[in-house]
Image (cartoon, rainbow, N blue to C red; front, side, top):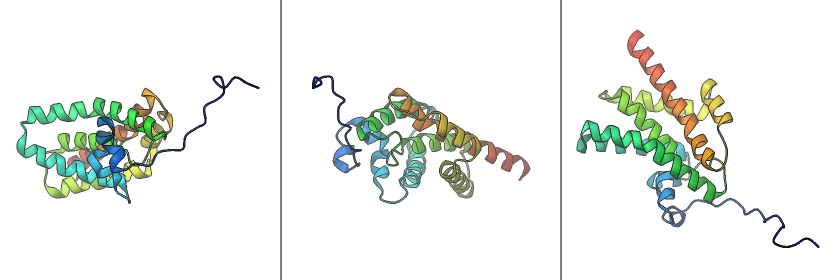
Length: 178
C-alpha cells in the first residue's frame, strides 16, 4: 500500500465566484472587477462597461498624469490579481475574471481620449468583438500564453492586451482614412 503522504492529492473542483469569494482576498476583488465579473451573463462585457464608466469618472477627478499612472499600474496589478484568483478558483482563465478587460480597455481609452461618445462606443464594440471572437493575433495570444502559476495571470491578460492593440490600430486607420 503506497504511503499516504506520497499519494497524489485529490483534485478539488473549480470554485464558483461569489460575493463572499470576492471579498476573501484583495486580488479577488480586483480580478473580479469590483463585482462586475459576477454578472450572470456576459461578465467580460460587464467588466468592459465598468471599465468605461470608471475611466470617465476618473477622468473628471484625476490629473492626466495620475490617470496615466493608474492605467499603467493596472497591468502588473492585474497580472498579480488574475494569477492569484485563477489559482484560487482552480481554473486557467475563469470568465468571472474581468480585470484583463478593465485594464486593457483603460489602455484603449487612455490613448483614444479625448473622444466623442460615438468614438468611445466604437472602441467598446470593436474591443469586445476582438476579445470574444479572438481573430488572428488575439487568438494566437490566447492559445500560446494560457497556463497556471505566474504565467497564468500573464496569459489571462495577454490576449486582451493584443485585442487592445488591434482596437487602437483599427481606430487609427479609421481616423486616418475615415
